Length: 209
Image (cartoon, rainbow, N blue to C red; front, side, top):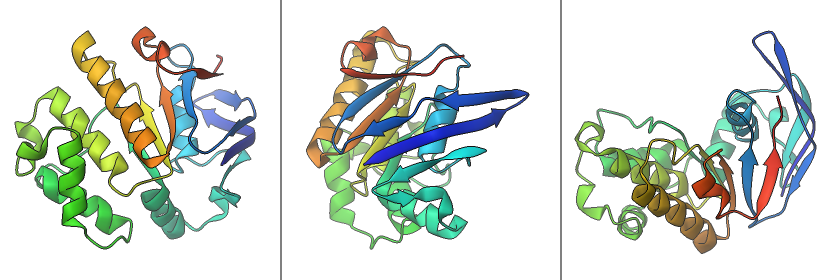
């Protein structure tokens, strides 16, 4: 499913090196490491957002950095869903239209029923006409998850998804990520040092300083 080999990336005046890693379809993994160790960088490398200085990322037999930038954008939109620490929604669009845009950017035919179903599964269908500025932090996180899974990606990645949440909302977000991954048999990769996440994910990958 996902294979990284001899992966290195320059970060400032440092060279981040990552252990070889093989992930099978449908597995759930936790990326562990101290702050500044390169967890976010690794997710960006896996998601095609950052090009390595050495090594390769292979997804389903496809070395993704051999794709042109346009093809990589399309591939990422169709196959990888990412939940960032901050929502990164289009502020001028409401929730529903943000999800329509995610389908369009991936070259997928707009499916309004799919959007309503995903929002319903995350208990935010009543906020589909709301704009990002009108949402609470918890609601923004749910919309980010909705956008990540809207195209039924084979891979879902989340970067510190519980860092700003209390115990109740952190538990809900973890439940939602695991539930959505299980529903679509997606590979789930969460970067976190939050013990509340550690207790829920069996497989771990360590990023060292």
